[in-house]
Image 1 (cartoon, helix red, strand yellow):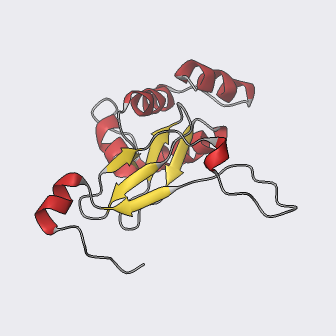
Image 2 (cartoon, rainbow, N blue to C red):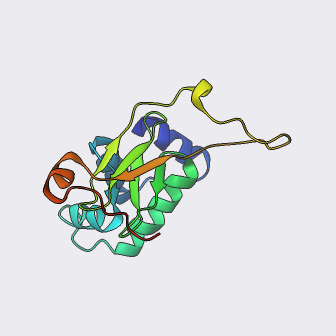
Length: 145
């Protein structure tokens, strides 16, 4: 989804386009990686020094509801938010927290849903150690869930 499409969808649902909301959308759309809310707050405060963290959190939830942003939960640490450009999955380093994007999944690779179950979306994350952390620590520790 482009920022223009998200803005159009927001207006169609009666939402207001504020400079802060537009800046958040553009920041996420430009980002080359998923970002945490604290990272987004810190970056946006350079442009809007008085911007409250609550404003960012509320807008993130609104963008998730709008379908423009996906949120995924980290095993430890802050959730990450990513602009939806195409459907894909992630590999998450358990040591440094780096998030790597995986190739889009193919429909035929998905497990079959149980009879009578109607899936509307799916998520998939691989947890392990990135190349740098695996070479430093051996990447063999299996953390508790």
